[in-house]
Length: 141
Image 1 (tube, rainbow, N blue to C red):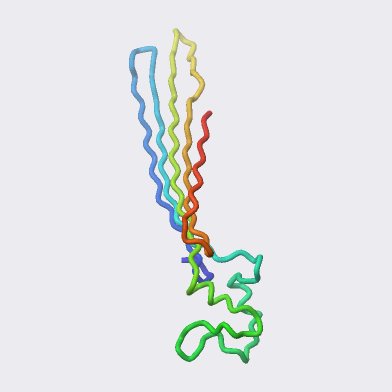
Image 2 (cartoon, rainbow, N blue to C red):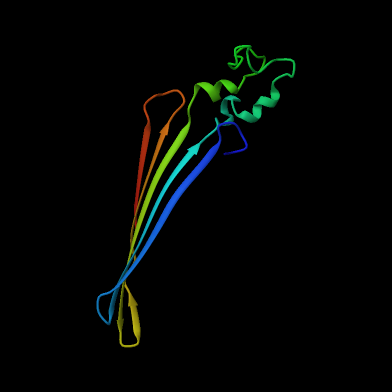
């Protein structure tokens, strides 16, 4: 839980390291990383809808109506409307695979270049649109 309304971040990750000695002179290694993140975000400050802007409401105006819903008729924008009526969550998945071949000849150890592939997918559901936005990112080294 964050210190602001509707602000939270969760992450789960795992790492697996494998090494196989194929022969006396050749060893193969692999590192696999998996991660999943969920980021509940607050609105940015573009439209003065950030929760920090709640301090700008005059103290004589009630932030909530008598039925418990946010008051839409305040002098300054009531950010509590964003809290109840909007969602802004980013879910990300990331996978990274690193292959490490190594060959040793007599007393000299030769390492081949590392082969790496990273895949990162972010899914975000904007406040004003019901269709999620999926952004895949692939990197190879």
